[in-house]
Structure formats: C-alpha cells, structure tokens
Length: 304
Image (tube, rainbow, N blue to C red):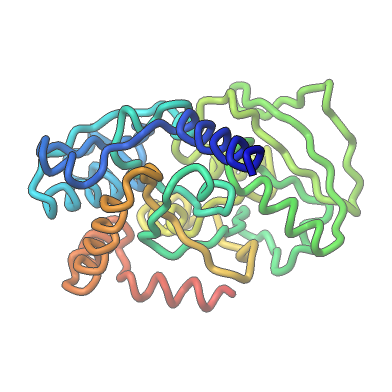
C-alpha cells in the first residue's frame, strides 16, 4: 500500500512539474486578468496582431471569453507549438488559445476543451487524385515532426498494412534537403513520409508552398485551418485541391487549461454553449471562414 501511494505521489509531482500549477476561475476574477498563451505566427487562424481587422480566430475567441468573464486579457506569446508543453507553462498563462488537436496523450498533460469539430485533410496540387490510402503509394507526404499528423498518418498506414519509409528533411531556400544520415530510398509500392525537423521555424502556408513547388506531392493539415485558408486565398483555390480525410472519425480542436483549473475550463464550456446558442460563434466563424459553421460541419461529414 505504501509503495502504491509513493508511486501515485511521484506521478502527481511529475504532472505538476511538466505544466505547472494554474490559477482557477476565482483567482482570475479576483485579479480581473486572464493570461492567454498564444503563438504569434502571423496566422488568421491563431494570432495575427499586425492585421487589425482580422487579428486571429483563436485570439478573438479568447478575447470574447475574457469579455464574458468581465476581465481584461493579457497576451503571452509563444514561439511554437511545442512550447505549450514546456515545464511550468501554466505558471505563466491561464489558458492556451490555439488549434490544439485533442489526443489521449495531450489530455494526460492538460485539460482540453473542444471548441470546433475537426479532421485531418490531405491536399495536393490541382490534378492530383487520392481517394484512399492505397493511392498514397509512390507519393511523398509532407508532415512536421511534433505535429500530431505524423503519428496519425503512421497509425492509419499501419492499420491498412501499407508500407512506408520516413525520411528527415530540412527546408533550404525553395527546396527540401534530405538529411543523409536517415535517408531511405522509397519504392513505388510504399509511401515516402517527408518529416520536417521540429527545429524548423514553421511559417503560415509552408505546407501548401512545398506542395505547389513540387517538393512534396501531398500535405496534411487540420480541416479548420484548411477551410480558413482555402476559402480566403485565390492562389490556393487555383493550385491546391482537397483530397480526402485521413481518418473516418471526426475529432476536435481545443483550448488548453491546467489540470488545477477545473472551474475555469468548465466556465469556458459554458461560454461556448452561450456563444453557439446566440450566434456569436457563427458570426466569428464566418468572419474568418467565409462560410457558416453549419456548412463547415456538413462539409466534414460529407468527406467521411
């Protein structure tokens, strides 16, 4: 019994060390300040402070939540997605406002409250034809190390018993350079996964540019981000086509909360219910996607 208790305490301490101890709802209402962690990556999906009219969907959703709580919002900028999982992150922020794909592994680290349905969509150049995983054989699929798409793609290929090789690449100028130490020549009967190192500083539209420039044949992004860019960007409509969803099951994107902030996470759930019931969420959604939230949901279901 003593051994079990000691193990439990060790796990608990490790969990706290990983993400820190967050403030809960009463602390935020008392200080009248909501600290929002967000990436400044010049993305209208996440945060684009230089664009006054469209500063970012996640930014505006977090701002609306702060208004709902009647507190001011303080922005804490992060350089990349991985930083959200650094030690003590919730010592610095109360909420992570970003497009975090909800996975079982991530739910062990923090509370994730879903705000929009989401899938992983494969896209290619105009004229490309991929309607099933088998069609990826002989093609180069671009993914980024550390993004959930990499592990999801491997899982789906393994389940379908489709062979693949993983080659590390690094962007240089207008090309993707193979890292020779890990290079494996791919045959036409397997999928070649081009894995971009997490050391690379990701920028908006990177995946699309690499496919358009023929450095890769297929890319993978979340449907939410794809919709925002595809319906708002003429050069994507002219050069890129959606191919298929990676998985049949529709997942979710969520905002992140500390495990020690259950009341704050619950209040965000209530806020989302309120915003979706009274059209506030749809107004924000249509501002960035140019389509209604209901049309987006129908589109995901029809792709399944």
